[in-house]
Length: 438
Image (cartoon, rainbow, N blue to C red):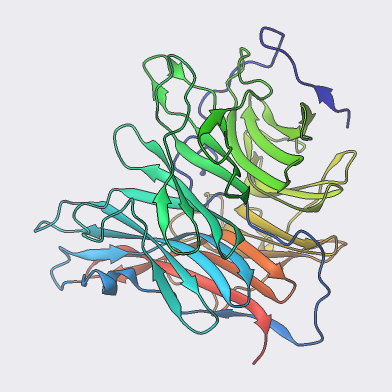
């Protein structure tokens, strides 16, 4: 695949996209559709017998003293937006507790919090942006990236009108809200964070999907943190007639940053080598209509995975593409039951012969959603294989939105599922671990 130089503003470009609908919306608030944290080098698997198992997730509802009522007037949810595994004894998640009630709290409030697993217990790590009072918490955290136990980042959005980006930093003892982003002139300061990469307390990157405002659809933003402030980063296509929507951002190293952006007809990948950007077009699946990339992960400059979904003649299907340093290649990811209907939201690459991707699938012609089931895929160096999720599929609806690995035998996947609740449906957390059988 030929690598194209960055087209300067005013040069010809593909036309701007309209809002695409794949059953997963490009402009919609991402549910943890972020790049997973992965090892920077391959680690050999141990000789143990590794399996997937369900892990009891922290229950934010209990912490807020909320409960389900028989009348159905109160119920809660705590879907997990993102997971980031640093080691066996340092795993972080973001969880969002949502309460619906007629009194005393307003309806539909989101309360995000951050939890750390120390190898034995979950420890709450309070986020300063969201008060513990569920009546006033109006924010969601969907992205996590830790460089070390003393340096971490979380990002998402405030649930104001319109949504506005939220970024927080962990210094080893507390979370602080990061200063406001730098928006280009005459653009609305709104949007949701769709990608996060961080290398230190003075070097972090985010991408922000923009809202539809009075001036129309804004191009997505790329921002860089230098330890003092956020600065807008001009990237390929940002100021052309196209309106790119960045759906994923991933950084393996300071000189190896990738973006995936939705453009009319498909996606463009863009690469930062530390000095300049290059546009790296991605191949379009045969017969594809709309398509999108939701997750990126790499082990080296020659081993990068992109996952997402595409809309074909048989419905919405999982998409996996691999970059070998010279070209992108589409590789099929099967769906259980020989059904092509499914999506992939996140990927964690461990080595050239070991990678995991997660999402959701559904038997039949309709997109994943109500009635969906967890989808876990494994790459063994030759092919992708669907792996059964622990405990089978929930009775109602389930999806996995984030996967992270610190080694071949320490892989975590997280998401949410619907459970019956007082005559209605409520979202509950899902957390799975792949590791040695104890």
